[in-house]
Image 1 (cartoon, helix red, strand yellow):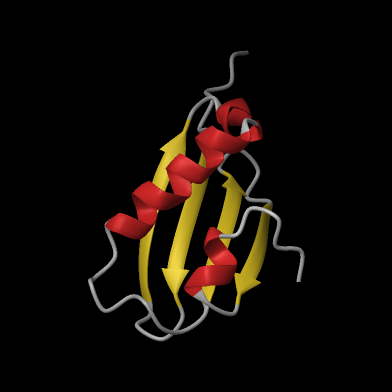
Image 2 (cartoon, helix red, strand yellow):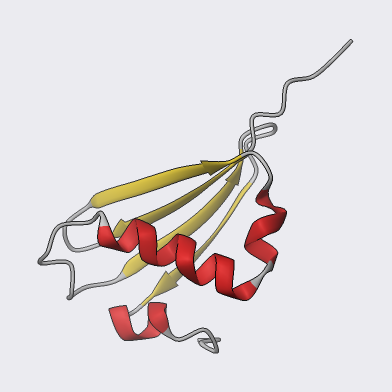
Length: 87
């Protein structure tokens, strides 16, 4: 029996606008590389509406093979863009 790799979905949602952008990664290990992860988040951010500057942001990674997901809420765009943000 072979199982199809459904990959992982990286999603970014603006909490104020309730708009979301997503991208599927069939090889999510690329997100372990900090620069690649930053570029992936910036790509999703660029696809949100221009008035995206305010509000909370929810970043979610979902394993499409089993439905398990992890998420993190960022209180501002500055917090989202700060790679050292731990709060």
